[in-house]
Image (cartoon, rainbow over all chains, first blue to last red; front, side, top):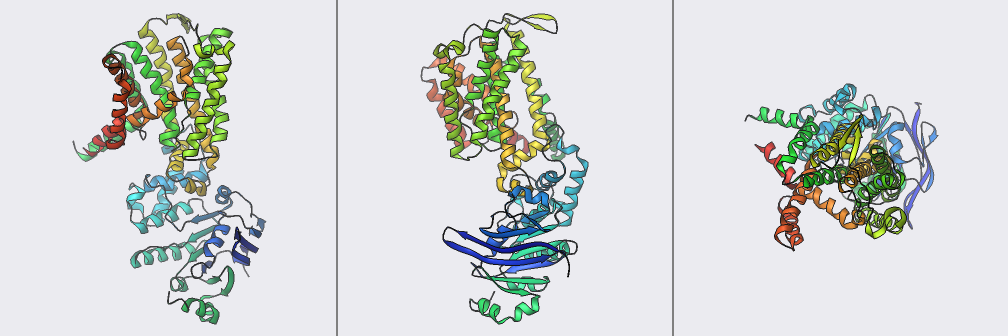
Length: 249
Length: 320
């Protein structure tokens, strides 16, 4: 049994009277690529937002490397070693791809120094170029983010998330709105990144994650429905009913 | 011109923007009809540049920046008139007074955004207006603060005639030049990068690990300090601080200047201030309805040249 990096203990979340999540206890192991799946309205996004610190849980605890971080302000998640990419493309639209990544790298290495020229930080600039190369955007470095293709913007976002040198990378529907070709490139990238990182991703399409993930967690109506390796989850009768009942995904 | 030559020209212009701006300002008095107008443009240009740190670079529209121009002017003037502080110290006091008000207003205003931010800054600046309006013994109330008679100033042991308009221009330019240099450095720094990131996408900047509220607060105070310096210089220039300096119309004026000149550029607000004051100067001699014409020009720019005068010129150069 490998080390537990992140865990939720009896986590629940309600919005007013609406209960989005009920009593979810899951432990995530270091080094694994885990997918959280479920049909629309299953509570995946709510759960993701709790894992990434965007929402504080209504009940229960979020533990990162054994410490309770349920009420940590979101901007401190990055310095703890948790980075996320978003469901909706979330970059700095009018800045160049390089500047997008550089600002993200700078958050960890430099901060807010107002006295030095930002071009003079050789380490920051080198790391930003490395990350662009890692996600396959080295040629688009000077392009304005808003002028890039959708798939490229998503890759840029992942480069920005990696800038925090995270111990844990959280990805919210990384292939949402992508063409089949873009999806394939993104899944390759995620698989490549997972070799030396812990990744938890939320996905709507079950088929996509079956091939690359080591563990699949299925949420339904805000509750944990299934949890296990892909083959076991795929053959689970409950999961089949939930997914097939709404047509194929 | 080849593409690479034009690109390297743009890069050169960007790297030396402060030096180029200062070079233009060195010959500026000879381009103007009279020197007092040149000094006005210098001072209000700095006011617009300071305002633009928040507006153009951080994406926060304040409708209360008169509070910083005004409190800087009053701080400097009161120090000179009532406490006999030397001129240099009085400028410093003016800046500190505006920093004080900027810290209070910034602390309260950064909790809001968009239209609420604009309204909160407007309301708070009105509080500052009434504070100075009521403190008659210090500020002269509605008559304004009078008696700032600075005829000679000592610079490094030399006595300089401050009544000579050309001399006055260059003394004030020394401060404006220093402020522009500092401003340019600030924008080129990692801090400047974070300001732009917040303007572009606040929640993403937060997810990167930046304390957005803190950065906004610092930007608010720095912006207030630049506007306060402009106010202090204005007090020295006019020898009087009219209560209108704190009026909300002065807050509105700087928004117009920044938009007219180009809010996404370093020097645009300065160009906007120059255009605004020149137009005002020419139009007031021609018609008593000059504000109508100025308003029309402003509307035309907002509708057809949203990048402003300087922003449009730069865009044209880049395209060439």
